[in-house]
Each structure stands twice: as C-alpha cells, then as structure tokens.
Length: 170
Image (cartoon, rainbow, N blue to C red; front, side, top):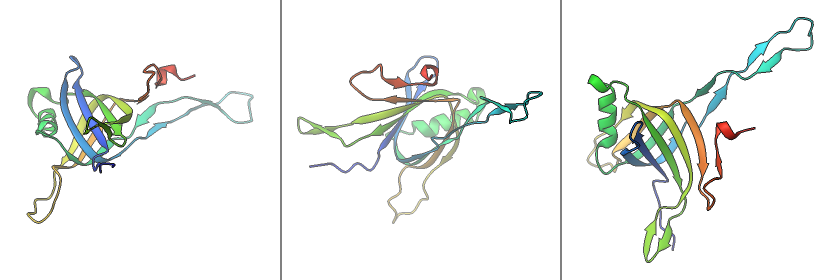
C-alpha cells in the first residue's frame, strides 16, 4: 500500500560557517528553478556576418516555497533575525530535497530522496503566514521566498560521485 505524501519537498538550511542544520521544513510546492545567462555580444571589425556571442552574467530567480510546515518556528526565527539587528542579511547554505514515494522498512515508512538542489548564499526575502480562520485547514507557512547566489543539482544514486555541478560541465 502506498502512503499519501502531501509534502513532496523538504528544505534544510545550514549555517554557512559551521554547516550545522538550523532550519528545516516540508513544502507541497516549490517554484523558481530558473537560471538565465545573459550573453555578451562582441562586434569585430570586418566581420559583417553577426557578432561574437560570449557567456555573460548568470542570474538566479528567487525560490518560492509554498504551503509548508515545520516542527518549530525556526524558519520564522531566521527570517525575523535577518531583517533586524546585528544579524542583518544573515545567509545560509540550503538544500531542497525532492521526495519520491516513501519506502517501507519494517512496517515504517521512510523518506525517499530522489534529487537534491543545493543552494548557496540563501537569504529569506518574504515570509507569508496563513490567513487565520477557524474553519480552514491552513498550513503553518503559506509562502517563503528565498534569494540565493548559486544552484547545483545533485541526484541521489548508489554512486554518490554522480553529481552535476557547473564546475564539472564541459
């Protein structure tokens, strides 16, 4: 029998310096997996058939996490700390884990990570809680917007060396 999994994505945020897990939550929708490279054009004198196209700056879209839950208020605390006081703009490293159907082991279900997106330089820019309505079954976090400075895809497999990163690309 397959167990229904409403939260297919888990976000983990780690301290950039120590690597300790500081925030974690599960979400039912994640958008923003978008990278855009703006090419630079270089005109060459005497070359009348177009310009040279070179790689330019790569821009990352904000990651938008929707309808999430967490066991404690750690994501709210992090957002609150980054918008005030001495820790203004405190950044973390993060990972968004895509979960497949749970695996049954000894009568219990366990997470089944399929792939992981690694984020660097993560900063929360928007935190939206649910509307408070006693008749609704809302979740604890409606939306969390994250900006970041890098994105890398890591697939789960028996061979952990099989990762795709920009540095390894031809």
